Image 1: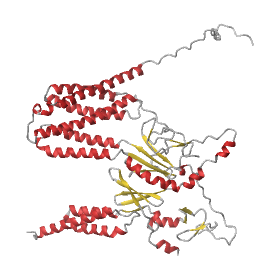
Image 2 (image 1 turned 135 degrees about the vertical axis):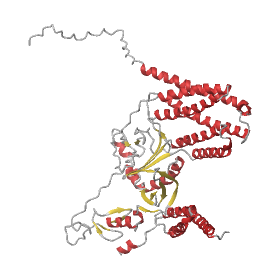
Image 3 (image 1 turned 90 degrees about the vertical axis):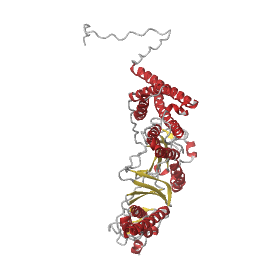
Image 4 (image 1 turned 120 degrees about the vertical axis):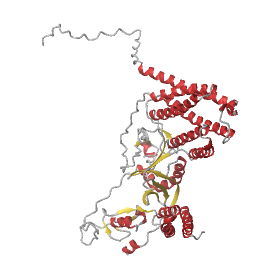
Amino acid sequence: MAETALQSPPNRIPYRRLRGRGYQGLVRPTLSRLYLGPDHLLLVEIEGYDEKYRRFYFRDVQTIAVRRDMRRMGLNLALGIIWGLLSLALIGPALQGWFYPLGIASSLFILLILVNTLRGATCAAYISTAAGTKRLYALHRLPLARRCLQEIRPLIQRAQEDLAARLAPPPEATAADSPEGPPRPELVRVKIDTSEKVVAAAPPETPRIEEPLRHCTGIAHTFLFVVFLLSAVHSLAEFLFQGPVLKAFSAVLFFCILTGIVWSLISQRRSDLDSRLKKIAWASFAYFVVLLFAAAIIGATMAVERGPFGIVERKELTVHNSTPYAVLMGADILVSVAIGLGGILLLRRRRTETLAPPAEPRPEPRPVDAQPPAPSVPSVSPETPEPPV
Amino acid sequence: MALSNIEVSCPSCGAALPDGAANSGNLTPCPRCGVRTLVEVYPALLAPRETKGVGELIVDDKEASCFYHPGKKAEAHCSYCGRFLCALCDVDFDGKHLCSACIQAGRTKGTLEEFRTAGKAHWLIGLHCAVAGLLFPYVGVFFVPAAFYYAIRYRKHPGSPVPPERSSFVGTMVLATLGALAQAFWIMGITGLLD
């Protein structure tokens, strides 16, 4: 009978696939998917043609943590750079015959940026049991993770109902009888370990380890703000004059601003830099993205106006002589000056505060009726003979 | 001990998140690094760890003994193979009592679905064969039949705890059919039938 039980075909567990799939690794990508079983969550990881299964029983789940990350912004930035380069190539007169392929490629990148933005913020989700913590790569978008959590939360709560009842605090009658009043509930500290190694459940008295903040010198920010000031001057010059030197300088400035933004955002991460400076760096990034969009729209308008084999001279295009273009240029100059000047002033103030010597402690005011302080105990001079013992 | 009285640390920097961050249902920004985190804590976190006994020794000859430890008293029998088990050998799994041999067999042979930890993605093999058959018609004689075989053979019995997706089956069949047509045209072309 026992052998029959073992030889019988495996009992099929009904699974329902949850939305979302994620990839992990670049060299040999592993596809992750989540399935919902009657009493557990099944994580299927496909590497090559091999599948690995990991089950998280609802009664064992201790924590689920979802941490928002910056991958969406990073991807948008990467796509935006390619798109910006394509748009620059579209505006430039060198690639006249490539108008349609470049236009299609540029639109494709806009579409990708749009899809990436609309899919929601990216995140990293972790599930912890007593056996350890595992990252759920399938839940890589925040809306997806929220939907999945909404689905599995009641199942976990139902599976742990009896446990919750056992852990419930004692009735209040006992607490009221005690002379000190109701006892204060014990604070439990939970450290969410995202290292994905097999760990035991963290004991309540685990000490918290806090990473110290890095010191940021502000060189990257100085570079960024100076480049923004240069950009303002360049925009003004470009508005008034035309020429190949200015065009070449605009390309150099584009890469300098990009480098400055990436450099400053990386250097300010977990650093002791002033929060206002951090905000200005983020604002410059947002402004750069807006500028890219505006450049693409202007480029597209110009391309439509001049046609595939049309005029090349910029002065002949009506878009450059229109009022909206002038307003846009004016706004660009103002914003660039505001970012550059504001940032440099803040940096200067920070430097002054850092270099200033620490203020001496102010002596405490003495009360009026107080006696003058008693003379301190005179130090024993070497000449004073010591009394004989 | 209440779940509301839990202080959660930031998964990014380890600093303590503000009070009420656990089970708030919202993303809470870390006061230190600013990373926004949503944390859900369940009662299993606070449950004490259960310790198992090592099994009692037999004092009377009439008592049943463990299959693996003849000197110890049997306390349960395996739900699958029926062997007597002592407290040490008994694995409590979802209300069933199992022995280590059955768990091992379930893992390696796939006899117990809930213990399987590895399998083959046959649907992916079929899909890749179909794509290869379509892209390289001169070797399609191998890939196209293989694609049909994997799609049909493993549709009902996927060899995996999870059922293959309908879209992957349809996609494989469509690509394999296109691959077969491409191969037919290629053969007709090289034999001169198209002329």
